[in-house]
Length: 361
Image 1 (cartoon, rainbow, N blue to C red):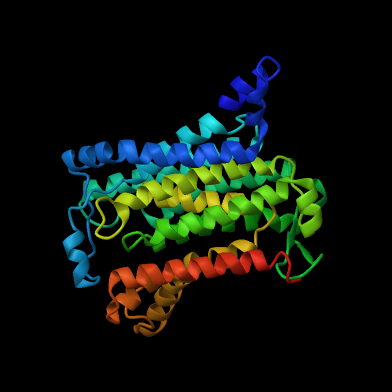
Image 2: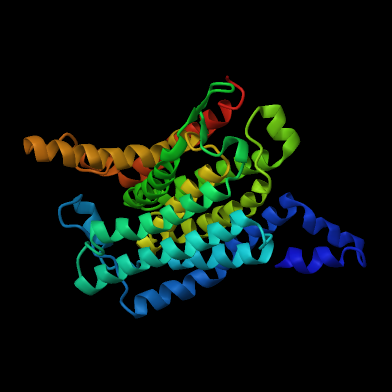
């Protein structure tokens, strides 16, 4: 919004030219979303508490988690408010990537809200059915995949996927690319949702991944940098970094209240859309496989659940003491804060490894 107002006035007042720079607006986005969280956070937490919107804790988990019962949830509303407001203020609203990211944020955020609402209504940890949640995610992902088939970010590489650490090595998924898009968005959305089990764990790794992807998006949208790094140039992709830094700012603001001991949980209202937008961005900038490295924590958490369920159905035995993986380490005796900080450290290492793939080829 600010871009559309002030940049048009740059002919009258030259300093308004600064609004054309993505770096300036991205900086504005991160500060704005951070301030919104700081200012509105206490109010939203009080309202969630007043209306008894509280977390229902699993009774089969670590005993230390029972003390978390009654902590306000649906804190994802705070992240939603911050990200959407900041993006509307600082991003170019006619950019197709921004439009789709806002649609995805609202759609998946609402789906998560419905899931959280049903958990509260039923007074247990089960909200939407697995089929119901997947249906909502697949509908959106399929819609985006159809759009990208008609209007690919880069027509030359429409259905091609670059393999990290290999220069000029691409895999053509052809007609199955639509399925790949659906798998990435649905998978990333649910992977973050499964990771959100310890104070600060999911949002900390979201901050790391979002910041890294913001740089990838900026590189992809800058012709000279993309050409130098030998990555696919995506016209308009630089604007994505404004959105992602709004996510980083909101994440930092939310972590202020979500750090141990958490004053509020994000719930599915936040985790579903945060995971979904990471998948969307990876698809937009043609770095689909990098997400497996950058989001390695989320991938391992999701696969630990799948492996546990599959193995238990086959043998009636467990591989892990409890899934997702973070609970396994808790059951081994590691304190919650130690698990969280170590997972953050691994997330940072994976982000560095992701950037290394740009040159180690």
